[in-house]
Image (cartoon, rainbow, N blue to C red; front, side, top):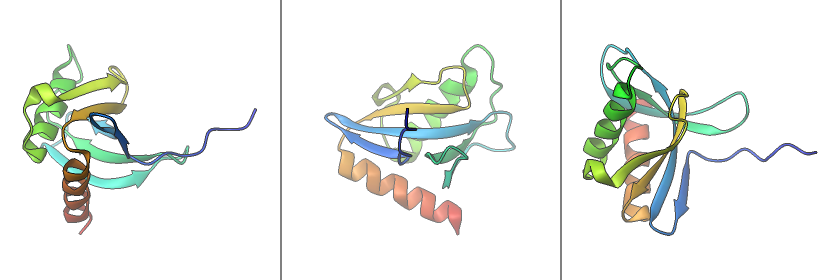
Length: 112
């Protein structure tokens, strides 16, 4: 069986987009970072939160961080995969083009 092709960090869907992130809990500061390619070839956006990875606190901090960075309500951001994993897929409800452009801008600023 052939391996699946690597996928980008941002994927558009009917009601917004999906964002694959690699979350680092217990970081010095809360921040969204650059895009990175993992060993499996999949692309992720790096994210760091100060919260501990217990009782969903890191996931809640990630949702707040992404919502704040994209000027979305927290209810428009949902962890759809990877609840207990470092690599997560978020669903962002909204205008996919605007959200993708904002994420690209955030990643570019973090990379420089």
